[in-house]
Image 1 (cartoon, rainbow, N blue to C red):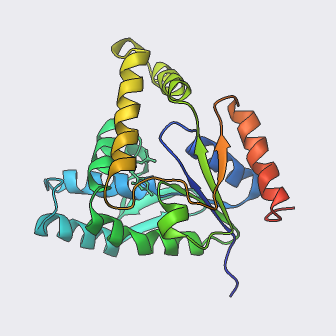
Image 2 (cartoon, protein in one colour):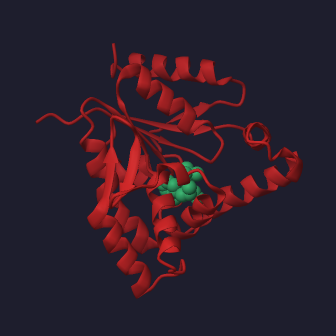
Length: 230
Ligand code: DC
């Protein structure tokens, strides 16, 4: 059986990875694998079971339960743990904070690695896999590696717009959001286990001066230019 084409996309929060990659995959009929969703789901599952996010036997049990019961539907991009659809809860602040805490632990990263590979390799066509260590750890053999980024200021602006959309803008200033994103960047890039960094052979894709539509077209053009799509 031939392996699907794998495009690894790493980069910091707010660089546009998920919306750009999801749309490109939808247009190309490829699978979008959002690996952050797995970290988010582990954090949520631990919360549901009343387990604190520290390394130990209780968290280890959660990882086993997760490994045995997680299911991802490529067609709908839904993530199930057992019979429960976790998708509607994955974007919550609780899920993001939980993900950031569990993502620091080597045991969690190790446990999730085979799932990320299996899920991506089961894509019927190609897969764009987004995360922080996809090009460096999960798929060092990816067909194409991209490091997607944008200035801190732009990323904070985009996040503020997202928050405005859901009606929570009055609680946060642009500066508050910049500080929160800078802190998350630091946590992701300074941790001991698989820190976020650009793979040496990754292409730098800076979306600071692009709107979403431009970035989508530009990514599609890159895939064509690399011979991954027609
Ligand atoms: O991309 P995201 O916001 O869903 O990621 C949530 C957290 O999980 C973030 O702190 C980074 C971490 N993460 C990671 O360490 N490695 C990945 N492959 C994906 C996410």
